[in-house]
Length: 235
Image (cartoon, rainbow, N blue to C red; front, side, top):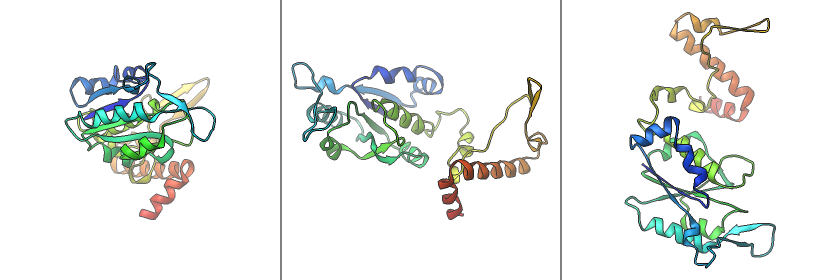
């Protein structure tokens, strides 16, 4: 599997893959990375990549030409057909189902906007999908692109050491993950004791599973009533 990040600031992205699980997976060649900077495809002598909006409005916009040239280059120089994903607040929210589905793709291109966004014509020409990671604004698309990449890669076989952990994660069956606990069983600080639920200590896996389901149900109902209603609807 390959990820190509299209960004004016590739150094913001590269460092993320130097440690932990994804660094190990990259060394095992479970995925490859490449970076394309639209500034390298600017036809302007100053490598300009931004300009004012037509029709007015605050801020600058990523121009058509440099980004088009960069994406056209990618489209025509890849072994596998690239799947172009643009990151923008004006889009569908990315979710776990998307992460699982996209983990089957061979070649994903993540296009990171900057300034006040991307000229809409480039999106119309190249985009296979457009995603947002939430109802808030960031200074650029690099963090959302990393978020998608991380979420997708966790579903690629071999990236996680224990694939069974995927089965208990949040958003399976439209439920949040149940609370988790580690040793010690009793945690004491400043005269207070904090306990692990006693059922977790008895070794009855059926009862533990039942309790986890109940806790996940309650947690979802409290924090994500939208998911809770979806879970109830599909039961």
